[in-house]
Image 1 (cartoon, rainbow over the protein chains, first blue to last red):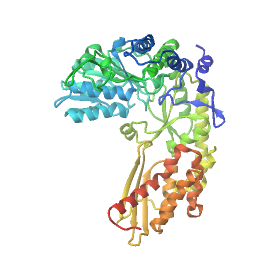
Image 2: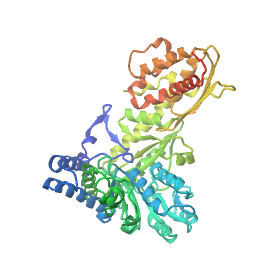
Image 3: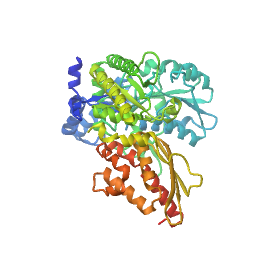
Image 4: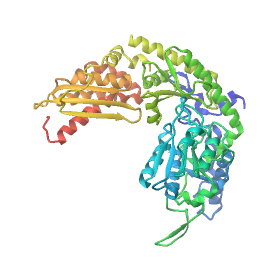
Length: 408
Length: 148
C-alpha cells in the first residue's frame, strides 16, 4: 500500500495540533486507529451485539462467532492456534494472569524467575510480587553495554531452579531487540519456560511463536492499531491446560455446585465474565490490517525512520541519543537535550505539533542505570513518513535554541 | 499557545538559581514527594516557630524547569510568613492555574507561571511543591501541634 493512501486510512492523522501538522511519534505508547478498525467495532455494535455464548437466538450466535473469529485473527498474527489465545485487557493483565496462574503451579521455595533490569514495570512487578508471595527468587540478567539482554547473559543466571524466564522482545526505552529464539533454547535447556512481553514487538515485526519457540506471549490491542482495553496472552496448549483460572465467574465453568466447580477448557476458563467483545473484534480487524500491510514492511519502515531520526538527532549539537550505538532494529529512539528536562522538551515539541513521550517510561530501574531521571522518546510506526522525521528534528533543534536563549 | 507563555525569563532564573536550595539543620518537618507519573522528586524542610510562622524553609529535588522553578518561587514567597498566609498563597496559585479569579497580590514571582494554565499536562509540575507543603502542614496539625 502506498504510504499516502495508508496514512489516509487513519482519520486522526489528518488533524492539526496548535495550528501545525500533527506529527504523531508516540506509537510505542499507543497507536492510532485505521478506519477498518473503527468500522469493525461500529459494525459489531450496530449489527451483531448480544452477549456471547449465552444466547440461544441467532443474534447471540453471531456475536459469539465474531468473538471467536477475532480470536482466530489474533492467533494468526502470531502463528498460534485460536485456543492458545486468551483475551485480556492488555499486556499488563496478560502478564498478571500468567504470573498468578502459572506461578501458582510452578513457583515456590528453591525456584526462581529470571528477568532483566530493563523490563517495563508491567513485566517486572507481576513476577516480583508473585515471587515474594510464593517464596521464590527473582533473578536479574546482566545487560550488555548497549542495554541488550543476550542469550549468554541469560545462560549465566539460569539453573535447575529456574521455572520462568520473563523478558521483553523489544525494549520500550532503548528499542533494543532481544534474540528470543536463542534465549528460548537456553530457557528450555534449563527446564524453564520463556514468557515474552511482546507489547513492543507484535505490532511492529513478524512474531511467530512456533518458530521462536515461545511458551507465553503477552501483547496489547491498542499498540497494534486496535482499541484500548483489549489484549491477549498466548500460551502453549499443553501449558494452558495445567493452569488454574484466576478470575472466577460467569461463563468460565462446566459445572457448579454450592461447594465446588469444574471449569471450561483453556482459553475460556481464563475469561470469566462477559468479555470485551467489541474490543476483541477491533483487535481482530487490526490483526488482519497489519497482516495485509505486511509485518516485514512495517518493521522495515520503523527501522528506516528510527535510524534517520537517530542520525539526525546526533547531528544536533547538545542532544544525547540513548540505546544501541550501531544500527537500530526497532522504531524507538530515546534522547535528551542536554540541560533541558524531558518534560520541557516534550512541551516545546508539542507547540510544534510533535507528540513524543517524556518521563521514565515505566522503567525506573533502567532509567537509574542510564543516569537519566527522564528522557524523551520518539517512536515510529507504519503511518509515519520522512516528513515526520524532519518535523521532529526541526522541532528538537528549535527547542534546543529556545531553551538556550531563555536560559541565557 | 506559545513557549514564551510558559518559559518566562524569571521562571528560568528560578530554575537555574533555585532559592533556599538544600536542607535545614533542624526542620520541624520534612516531606519527600514523588510524582510517579513523571519521576519528579522533591524534598521539603520546614521550620515553623510556636507562633505558626515559617522561620525557614528549604527544598531539594529533581525535575523539570516548571516543578523546580515553582518550588523555588514558593519557598521564597512563604519564608517568614504565617502558615495561614502561606496557605492563601498556595490557594491563589492553584486558582491562577485553574484560570479562576486569583488573589494576585500574594503571588510575587509565582504569577510568572500563569502560562502553565495553557498546558494542562504541566499543572501538576507547578503544584508539586504546594502538595508537599500541604502535607507538611497537615502532618504538623495531626501531630497535635498548633501551627495556626
